[in-house]
Length: 109
Image (cartoon, rainbow, N blue to C red; front, side, top):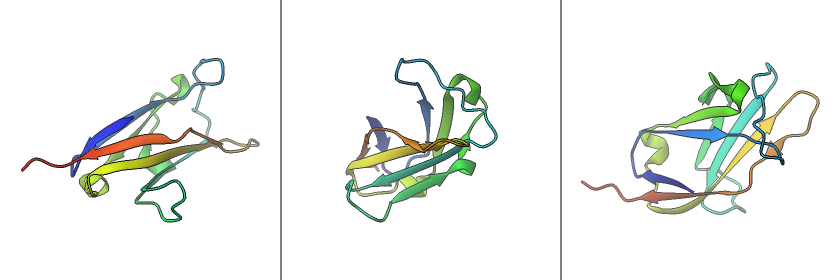
């Protein structure tokens, strides 16, 4: 689960592993990343959308990527959401994560 506070800037770190638990080298030039956050899995419109340019890949060779959320991204109604990370690579199908539970806590003013 990813826990966020309403209106905060947050960097999320993902470590990508294969079915055996080994890290996946994501440093290839043709690897793409897409992330969406929705209220419901069935929603057709995402509240947050991030693409390859929005991901930090300094440690991609060790399976680690980062994604930054700005205050506009996290300024959502407090409650539960569903996230999904998709990774594409040359000559392969796009792999997607299991649903990622996201909870946004109300900002304290």
